[in-house]
Image (cartoon, rainbow, N blue to C red; front, side):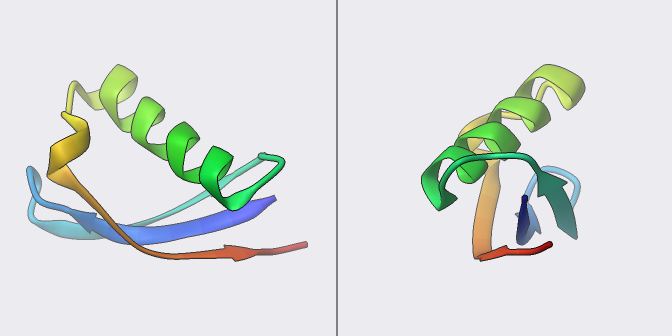
Length: 55
């Protein structure tokens, strides 16, 4: 489980998401995919600031 923190440029607010993933890169990919499919936000509008592994 990873916690991804960043900034959503489209909505102009920070976000924190927890996702199940095997690596940090997979966690980032999952978050970008979720924002795109759930909110219709492009990947370029998401700025990832921090990724850390959580229990």
